[in-house]
Image (tube, rainbow over all chains, first blue to last red; front, side, top):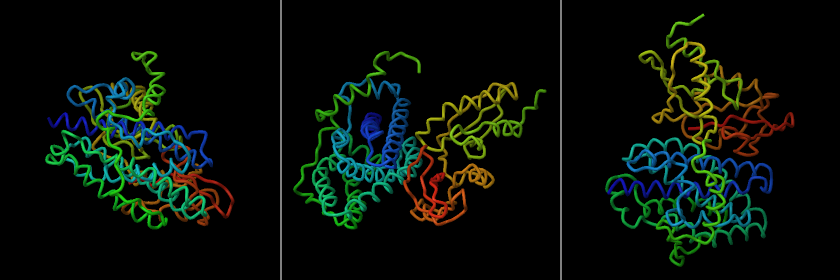
Length: 253
Length: 163
């Protein structure tokens, strides 16, 4: 039971990082200024690195599969990423707001895992936590700058926040069958707790940026991703991402 | 000439294994080696990557193995150590000077967590001025940030402080 629960947790975390890493990489060569092009490309590399580390932990569990097969050869319904990471990049406002909301959530998650009873995650969390500092530093700086860069800029940031909030709340979809077991075994504090810690983390930044947090009672979190129900955007992304690997899955790199 | 197989000689050989992204620094100077163990007829080298997504890890593992096998004629296993996380305080002081001479500002010494202060007034490696600012926390490799020096008008890179 616990093995299945841990597999579920690791898979959703790895899938979030893999898919958002892929989306971030789509800014390579297209960033609005060179530094931002580099930033999103670097963060893509970090995210895919973190997903690789998680897939490696999965590989070493009983019945674990090789990391590449997990990343490139699973059917869409076996993916457990949240809807937030699946959406196309759209504009820079959308991408940046997603980056801010997701990376703050990720930071909160890895900080909590420093006390995890599951040793491989506890060890990885120490490494990832320091690296994520740069992602949240980058996100906070740009949320503040763009929210104070005139009326149009402010409006676009507020609109992005309004549109993304329900998707972002979907990060914290509880694991249907495993949530309590993971909490009881002190693997992690649970999605509800992480959600509250995340709100505490993003709120002061939004206040500084004079952005209004949408009414949380009025939004319906975009759930479904954790149980394999995805947006229409995931399928084409998976096809493109796995295209080269699937030409010859036994090839030696 | 065949060298005697000692921990010291292994470290001497490891000093010749350079980081591919910063070719003036060895894996030892960067603090990437966590342990060296002599085993029956061979040696084990334990190492850690600077960043989790560092693309050079496999390359470095191979280079370490080749270098030691060439110098000491022993089979070598290179193990990535999961128990220790790299942080920028692991870079030796001597290595920081080399880094600066190479044109990359070294990371300031961490006393606690990484904070914004570590990115202000970073001395320019070209002219030494501290009239500088952070242009971007990401640079040409995962371990570098981009700064600008107002005194000499040049962009420069900094090896990022990492917890």
